[in-house]
Length: 102
Image (cartoon, rainbow, N blue to C red; front, side, top):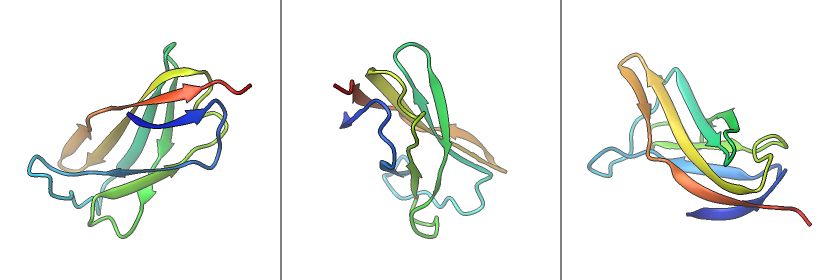
């Protein structure tokens, strides 16, 4: 499970490492779509467009959260979505606990 965050946290940088079945970095240069999809406990769905951490050849992407990313407390799923001219992929999802603000 990923590090805990709080409802409404902004400016949290989330980095994902995209690797193939041999655990080698995927070259993402030329990808048409790079996104991280956040799915909430009550059906919420927020999509953030990702950018390269470096030059894209190392498979590392990142997003920075905004005030709408985590709107309610609970268990959220994060999943990378990639589209290229060769096809479309969804990486294994990761759980993250979103805590209430007191």
